Amino acid sequence: MDQIVALATPLVPGPLGIVRLSGPDLLSTFGKVLSPFPESPTPRHAYLTSVINLDGIPVDEGIVLYFRAPDSFTGEDILEFQMHGNPHSLRKIQNLLISLGARTAKPGEFSYRAFLHKKMTLLKAESLNRMIQAPSYQTYLQGLKNFISPSDDPLARLREDLVALLAHFYVVVDHLDLPDEEAPELSDLLGRMDQILLKLSSMVRDQKRGLKKRSGFTVALVGHPNTGKSSLFNRILGESRAIVSTVPGTTRDVIEGRYQTAFGDVILLDTAGIRVTDDPLEKEGIRMTKSLLKEISLGIFLRTPEDPSPVLLNHTGEFLTVLNKSDLLPKGSLNRFLKELSPAPSVLYPVSSRTGRGLPELLMAIGERARIYYEGGSVNSGGDSSPIRLDLLQRFQRSMRQARIPLSAGQFLESLHRLEQMRREWEDLFGVVSHEEVYDRIFSTFCIGK
Ligand SMILES: Nc1nc2c(c(=O)[nH]1)N(C=O)[C@@H](CNc1ccc(C(=O)N[C@@H](CCC(=O)O)C(=O)O)cc1)CN2
Ligand SMILES: Nc1nc2c(ncn2[C@@H]2O[C@H](COP(=O)(O)OP(=O)(O)OP(=O)(O)O)[C@@H](O)[C@H]2O)c(=O)[nH]1
Ligand SMILES: [Mg+2]
Image (tube, rainbow, N blue to C red; front, side):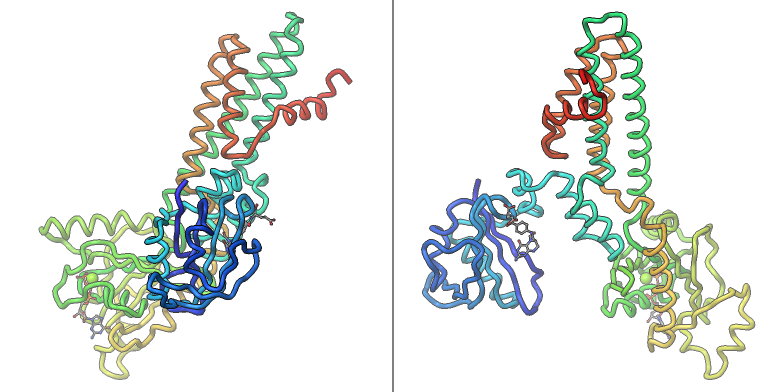
């Protein structure tokens, strides 16, 4: 196993920046750039020390921690540099460690090593990733719950199903010498397997449904070309992300931005203006906008004094109507204009992407919907879906189907053999399932042999 290095904090100026090393022989390789630093540091002791480059010049002074294998996050030796959070000095430290033999870690590689050294099951690693990526505190808590008590995870309950099923198989093994009792037992086993398979199908369905949705509260800006969707997008995000021009049909791709609210992230999408066009690129953009409408949580439909007619689209979800470019209206004429607007929306937010007018009210309205989204049921349905979970479920489903085939042909032992194989394969995911555990189940719930 080689020595890997990675920044544990983002590369932006901040109070602290953390660089982590994991692998064998860290002290002998990297101890020489630390001064002062003992040859045999006490594990988990915070040492205040300087990092010195190969020319003997200090790069930074900070806290260095040593974790000795196997008592660390990865199960390997870990050296952690808790430095001042300047991106340039942190990059220098990382490059210094690389010049001494470490290589840059791949994404998720620290967790992968923790998994390899049995510090974490796959299921825990997946929950950890979901925690870090969570778009709101509510969603984060779901991941944390699975992380802290992995056995409550619905996927982990499959382990219980497998253990219980095996226990029932062993009851039959104990009765194999009594041929008369065999037949009813086998049909009982088939019934139990079918129950598990049924549950698996519904879990797979939920995962697939959840994966189709975008994760997080998603808002799309939609309207005719030139209504100022890209200008509003840039104004809300406070940066010039999307190209703005006087030419209608400027935006073709869907552009994604993200901002945080107290309730959770808002994923904001700028889209291609909708109109009849012959330009194939623009047509494709319009097609994308239309199909996007099915995936979003909220639509913002733009109209302007220049172009007051609404876009005609089939959208059944929730939307807000915005009158952009309201600065073009002569002073005092807004109310009259709104009254004459046809068809008149029940609620309309007058804004100006140019002056920023009306923006706080619009952002409040979006924020309120984000709160409802994250606090309500929308997160719970499909909130725990991830490609990894779907993949694991489908594999479990395949193995279970494979184990059922011989049983339905009366080949009891072959079926047991396949389930035992399954138990071993799933140790990575669930942790070890011991023979004792299967037998404990027999004795605790069936009282065989009394
Ligand atoms: N500074 C720092 N903070 C951090 C981390 C880190 O790597 N560094 N973590 C990184 O994710 C998280 C904490 N996760 C950790 C998990 C296990 C061990 C660890 O040393 N485990 C040993 C000893 C267990 C014990 O003492 O109870 C082990 O499992 O053998 C350390 C951090 C969040 N905070
Ligand atoms: N007066 C005024 N002009 C605006 C406002 N918002 C946008 N514009 C102008 O309207 C024109 C079109 O703006 P865009 O943001 O590119 O419009 P769009 O809706 O993204 O257009 P497409 O990408 O072509 O669909 C540009 O010249 C903008 O400067 C506004 O609030 N007030
Ligand atoms: Mg645009």
